[in-house]
Amino acid sequence: MISAAKEARVKVADDLRQNGNSEFVNCLGVSPAFRRAVGLALRVAPTNASVMLTGESGTGKEVLAQLIHRHSRRATKPLVPINCAALPENLLESEMFGHRRGAFTGADRDKPGLLEIANGSTLFLDEITEMSQRIQAKLLRVLQDGVVRRVGAESQQIVDVRFISATNRDPQEAVTRCILREDLFYRLQVVQIKLPPLRERVEDIPLLAHHFLSVYWERHRSREKAPTFTHASMNHLVSNPWRGNVRELQNVIEHLAVLAEPGQAIQPADVPLYEQSAPAQASSAPIADSLFEEEYHSAREKHVSHFDKAYLSRIVDRAGGNMSKAARMANVDRTTLYRLIERYSQARDSSPDAAPTADM
Image (cartoon, rainbow, N blue to C red; front, side, top):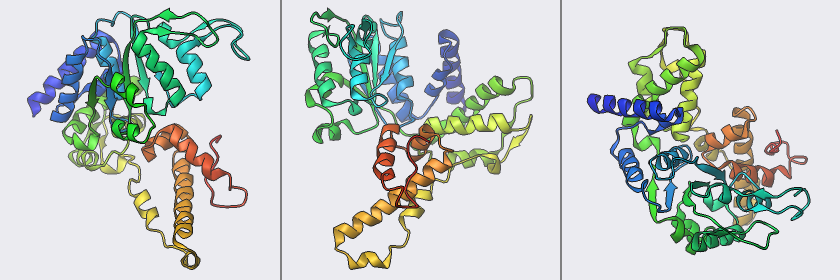
């Protein structure tokens, strides 16, 4: 195990030197499931096959997309990423397909879309299942015919784009629920690569923790002697469920690098782990006696609604109002978190325990 760990560190160090991208540290790992995923990525990288990356939030799907692109024949041009969950439908359409001047209010000039910009390169579609059915239909034509038409334009442009998509949903379930078009699914998933959650690759946690500590200490405190993990603190890290996966571990280690004393022996109490048991505790809250006087479905909806509002309020409060951080702590998409908050914030004026609004 020790020799494998050293070999993995050397491989990542080589990647860092060659690529100048510190994000490649997330490719560090010796667990069989993770190495299989990386190995498959490297096998498919030199081809033009569309790849779909699946796995929980924070497992490193975008990093793997970067790895595939860097080992492809298109690596001379930059990877072009777009988060399908971060933009409303009309803006996402304009960003992807571009538009002509005057196509809509505010379109004061011609603008190429990301599909044109990615011509000869790779387009990374993050959270593909959050894309509307209408835009999915337009994207399908690009995949089938290799042509793009800007919003408001009459002419078409031929493009040569490789597609890498990612989702933290089960794509087959998304097809069954009509969230993802079946024909688009088969076009995008020529090869599927599933990234394992961090809890299923616990042997990688010490490697990642040591490397993140080195990276962030160098970034924030390079002139001082670095702290070290004690055996107890490392066991503490390994035993944590890491619902936010590598992204959460990275956040925790950066926190340590910023606050630790030079040369400090890090103890379990120094590790700022989130309260992973909070949702389970909240779900066992007592049910009000008045609910038993109502019919089942109405009573159940009120109880679930009360839990949701309390949970959202607490998770946003614990994240200090940072919605991205709250979404990571809850292990949901930021878009999903916004939707839940919007759903329950409508009653905030009449309900003192309603969830905070999304503009905080």
